[in-house]
Length: 336
Ligand code: DAH
Image (cartoon, rainbow, N blue to C red):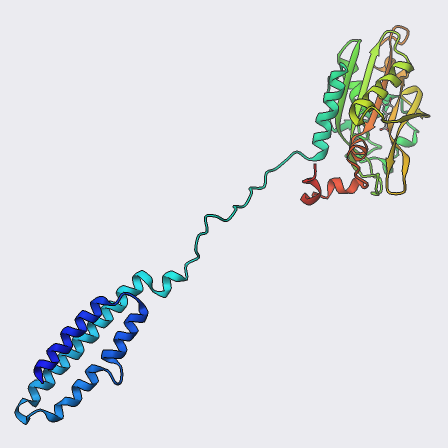
């Protein structure tokens, strides 16, 4: 009987060495340590053992059971470390999956438009000038021949920064025509410049109006400049920027700083078929403006224009609402 205990012990050791999966380990547990397992059966043999050997047998059987139990526990923790459930729960890396594309930034469509406009006018020989967005009344109005009582100077139509009735009030410029004055103050003719930038007006927002927008201002001063030069320049610009079939229309208008004056229109489809949209003003520089900057109006002539950049871009990209340009919705901006 005592020999049988040794046999079970060595058989268990051989079986356990062969175990390599949780399933096999469970089979081992049932065979040796289960409720009908070999160690349980072993204990029942004691009733057949002669009295004087019972004690010896009991000790030996207990030691054998404990040995099998502890070998089983060791095996269990070894298996767990290599193939246990903790490992299988880890997310698997599938290297064949396509990765995520990094989202790249890009230039706002208005910035792209400014670059393109400067490129077109650059090729036509215009230099680039800049001017401040906060202005004094002299550059925004007085030097542009806009007198004190003119409705364009109404505090309700401008963003004044200091008291409009004070000594030298400041305002956010309402037009880039200010840069015409600043340029002519510092250089002698001939002059051929464009200037782009933001302008500010307390307009109600709708599909074609916004309280901040961008303008491109142009100024050409030389001898014998005519209205025909202005019209040719605008037609050439329209064909270069929108394409050779683009139609434009000049409609007589009034600006204090040009005489004669006109408004520039292009066709735009807002959904009900093509209609004329006003994109800016232009004209021959008024002699009163030349006098303010010290140019002799008998010697020099010139034309000027100021166009709304958002509307130019709207026509180019078929954007039917100016407000979309300023909502910063990347789903919209990504298209350009
Ligand atoms: N400054 C005018 C405006 O914002 C546009 C304009 C008209 C500019 C005629 C010009 C010009 O240079 O000659 O409405």
